[in-house]
Image: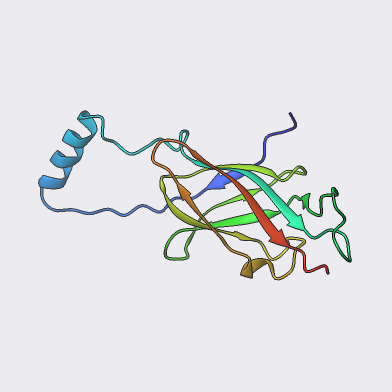
Length: 141
């Protein structure tokens, strides 16, 4: 297997204060083993493909899509970037994320048609990685 795809994650945090109640609640919540999932255990991994890659009608038995390397942005439910990752030359990627719903958006430099309009919704489960294949349109006809 080749080099591992690069990923960086920037997570937003919010602080809330309500006297001594919330800190005590947080301590008891963590003591019960109900703490948040580790970012080492949840996220999204998979492959990105683009197609069609040949002009004209698709030929039977010949794949008309190919993996590609590009930068991608991970947005939360408020369209705020929380992470970014780069797929490798085989289109493979992995990014650690907390369980939630996300939108994956290619960077404007991606070799596909209207990259920022090609958005994919992905849900990260509570205790695992979401395994996905993300397909993008090249605009070739």
